Length: 120
Image 1 (cartoon, rainbow, N blue to C red):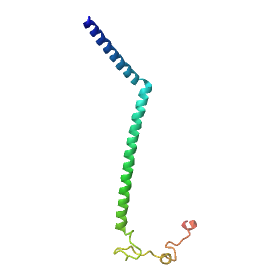
Image 2 (image 1 turned 180 degrees about the horizontal axis):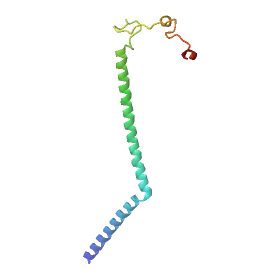
Image 3 (image 1 turned 180 degrees about the vertical axis):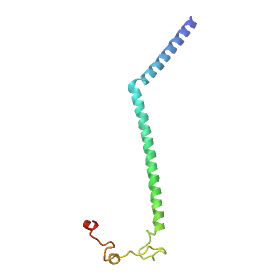
Image 4 (image 1 turned 60 degrees about the vertical axis):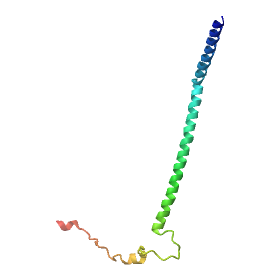
């Protein structure tokens, strides 16, 4: 008699446990719950991606500023005003008057009229 009661109770407990597990899984697989899980995963991925993009942008900005400083030093853009000019300076620009003076005063190809009557 006790043996039957034990197995009946064990079977009922197993049935309740299995029913609880199945119902819990069914609730997880409802469309609303699946949509909520997908939204949570997407939000988590977006936050993670946003953090990676922010870190990348900071790295790019840091490298850009460093490279700009290197180029400024190489070109002498950050030298003080009172510093002597660098050894290889660009030649001074020509003035507009010098450019106008170098132009020829007469056109190179004078205009000649063409008379068709001379061909006949």
